[in-house]
Length: 269
Ligand code: IPD
Ligand code: CA
Ligand code: CA
Image (cartoon, rainbow, N blue to C red; front, side, top):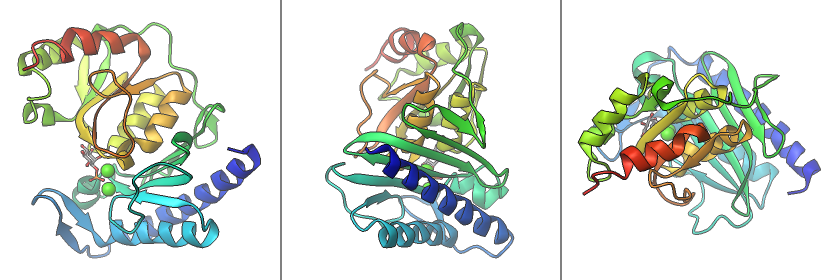
C-alpha cells in the first residue's frame, strides 16, 4: 500500500475511532437496549449497532471502494480479502460493556490484499489507544511500545485464557490444559480479546490463548502484536484465516513452540 495513502487512512481512522469512543463515553449511563444473538449469553446492544453503523457511514462515504467486514452485519458480505478491507468490531467485550461499563474496546484492523497494514485497539473508558502501522512499530497513545523483552520463560509467564477450553475440549486435551495452567506463573481473563492482544503487545501478558475467535476480534491485535515482535497463529501453529473463525494463540515467540508442542498438541483426541 502506498505510504502516503496509508497515512491518510490511518489519520482518518484514528479520528473516527476517538469520535466513536467519545460518543460511547457520553452515553455510558443511558438505558441500554440489549438483545441476544447465537445464544442467551451472546449479547448485543444498540450501542454496538450504532457504533458499527457510524463506521460504515464514514468509511463508505470517504473511501467508496473500501470494504468492511464487521460483526453486527452492516458491512459487506466478503468472500475474499482483495482490495482494502476494514475489519471492525464496534464494541469488543460487550458483556463487560453491559455489566461493568468498562473493559471493552473498539477494534479496527485495515488489510490491503490480505496484508495487515493498520491496527487500532481503543480502550474506550480509559481513553487508551493502541495503534500500529505495518513496519513502523506499535504505540500506546503517543508512546512507542518497546519490543518484547528477550528472556521469557513459560514458567514465569502470565497467560491470558478464555475458559471455553473447558467446554470446547475436543480441540485440546483437558489434562494437558490443566498442566499448562499449572506450568505458567499465572493466568488472566479480561473478557475482551482485543484488549488481551493489546496487553500482549504491551508486554504485561506473555500470551493469550482461546479456542474460537472471529476475524474482527483479532484483526487489529495481530498487526499490533506483530510490531513488537510477538507472533500469532491458531493453536496448531498454523496461519490465521481472516475470513473464518480460528482458535488463537498470540504470544511472545519464546514460548510459542512449547505451548503448542508440549501442551496443545499433546493427548488431543
Ligand atoms: C467477545 C470478546 C471475548 C471473547 C469472545 C468474543 P464481543 O467479543 O472478545 O473476550 O472471549 O469470544 O466473542 O462479542 O464482546 O465482541
Ligand atoms: Ca469481539
Ligand atoms: Ca463485538
